[in-house]
Length: 115
Image (cartoon, rainbow, N blue to C red; front, side, top):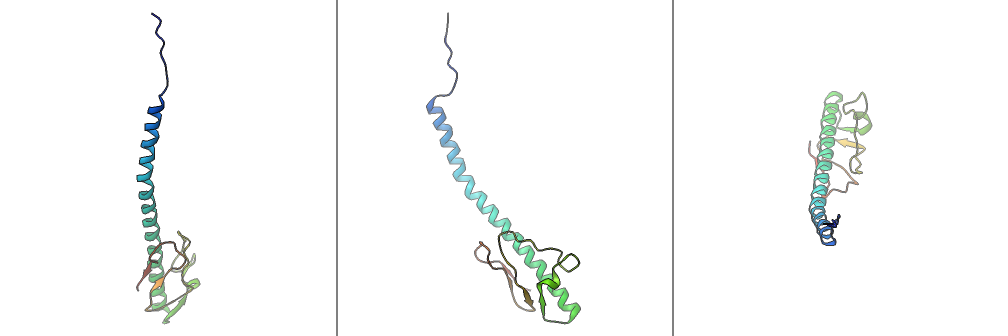
C-alpha cells in the first residue's frame, strides 16, 4: 500500500480565508477610526480645559482679563506643555468670559470649552 498524501490548501480554502479576512477588516477599520477620533477629541478637550484653568488662575493672580498663551504655557507656568494631537492650533490670546476653541483640527465640530 503506497498511498500518496497531498499536503497544502485548496484554492477554495484560501479564497474562504481571504473573504473572512476582508470581512473582518471592513468591520474593524471604521471602528478603529472612530476610536482614534474619540481619543483625539478627548485629548483636545483636556488641553482646552487645562488652558481655561491656567487662564483663570492667571486672571485671578494678575487682575487682568486677557492673557497671552506664552504667559500660561511653559515648564514653569500654569500649563506645563500643550501637545497638538490632530494638527490643531490653539489661540494666541485668551480673553476672560469667551470660549476657547481650536482651529485646524480635522474633527468636526471643532472642540471648544466655556470658562
